[in-house]
Image 1 (cartoon, rainbow, N blue to C red):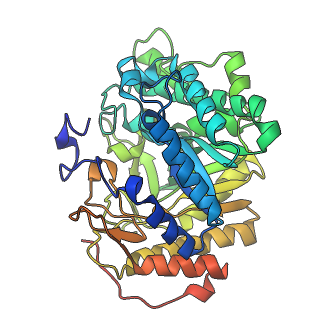
Image 2: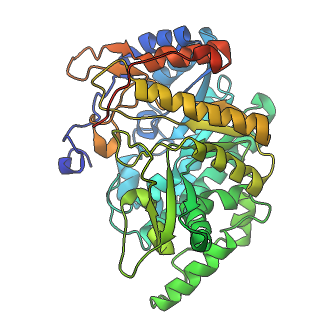
Image 3: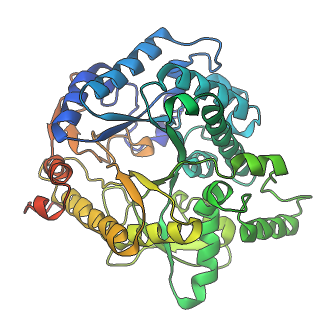
Length: 445
């Protein structure tokens, strides 16, 4: 998509090389070790491991590369945390319908089995799929790969099949690998904190939450399973008014509900930002970062005092992560929560990134309060991200890295930002107070 439609990317760049961790992985693992990290999250590329998309041909180069990274981490005392799918689908499978084809559930399970067979002896924590909402609700609005514009039907078919693919992969591990390797698996959702703009907006806020992320969590983590009931009723009624013979939200069979329910060992959470919710005016629509909540006739806004990062969608509201953690506990009980992404973007022009330091300090403080005062069972936290990288439609204009990467140099040199030193202090001290340092404040215009 990037090569055929370069206009989709803000700076018309591509991810062919990006930060080139493929060649620089040993240097990268040295930096991971120097920071004192307990674990390092990375993803396996489905087409890199299975170049034809199907499990009949495994790439020796792919097997060797990922095995070397895993072994290198373990040799340095760092646990590998592996994501099976972070949005790179084999093109052949996309041409067969991608995530709208129900057969992809089996294809993904086959791919997962290959990865488990090769690496489960050395990997104890797995993420099946990263951010189904981004894959379906943004990808099927034409803004991320596959760039298909069909949010009314395609996005909802995608949502069902992504969830079922996760569940099938989870059951493959439980049935074929769990007894021997004792690993843990889950899916990871991207979730904003939504709060009502006024007291009158509470009901629409709850519906927006259900559409944006309850759709991807309720079938897995709730006691009843299936789609969130209020959302299911809402979509059935809306589809009927639109003239459809049945709900655009495709139903689960009883067997599918059973397959999905309980297919987790922890709650995987990506969180960056917050929004206030109000009811939409007639004909009013919002941006793609709304994650499809226009289906719920809701509009998302930011409080005027929330700072904006270089990524315009990222509004800083540290209290949002604590509120979200409490909501997860309220909805799904005392589940283990692994925060797999949280971070801040700037333009990358300075290494003295005081805004990013402040973001991590303030958000981590709220995580600590959720643990200490709200008894939320947070078991891990990962920053997004270790290095500047290709940030999807933003290209290289939005930088999230603790380490800067010079993309103008063929060598892709890394340089530690102030936030990397701050984060390393937090990791080593196991405390926030020991890491409080004064940095020059940066602007992000």
